[in-house]
Length: 349
Image: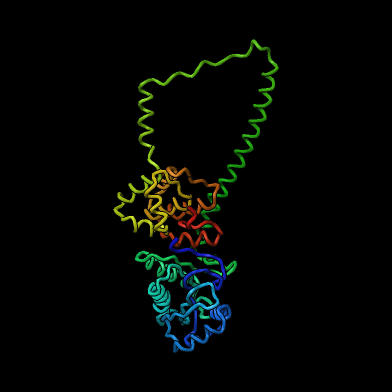
């Protein structure tokens, strides 16, 4: 998939390049910088000594040495000074220059830490926003798989207003649905007990009291014709419906699958196979890319064999964004990631 948020140790990422949040000297330091140098071995420091340092926002490349990554791209993030000293432009440059350098060296996969959000004091929510927007813009024009690596149980979005709004929506919809389901299950249990007792009494009745219902009537020609028409209207599968929607929205295929955060190879499978059944996160991803409303989303999902259910927190979260007209797939994935749920377009075919 083009862009994925993962929980991992960046020094263990098996990618073409990992990005090191370095200092201007490029001679090692604490945090991610120190961990990368320790994992790569002393050869990394030896090569870094030949680079002559790096300016803030710039990026320089070395070999990965003992790391599973082929390359290390060193970039220097800005120190937060209140946001009025060009910090956003410098942080944007870190991501953009690192991606361009990876592209120049034919990298197909690259992993970033969250640059400047640690000791350099960049506000976390704003640092995430810069990372996501810059990476997303690059991927709309380029084919590369990009990982944003979060260490351990670190949270991306907990505490911000959007997170709280989504949580409130979950509480209203998901919890209410479960209370209703509990009441419904209780009612059905009582009904089944009564039905079982009634059936037992009927079995004890004389045989002559048993009546047999009439056979079901055959469909009339008119009713059969109506059924055929209904089937003709509903027999389009997910693949055909998706392609029709792309045309109707005036989008190109590449624009759609990139906005859906879906790999080109997966999209080719969907396009070439009219019977293709995607995963639910993938089906949702295309609905977000096409900016479908809730009814249109439900129809697209139904053609893949799914339904939106309020008994699933995953469904409720995605529904929140659709209902509120927020179609940034990476913003949605931030929320899903923090709740350990599958990401949209996450490559789960």
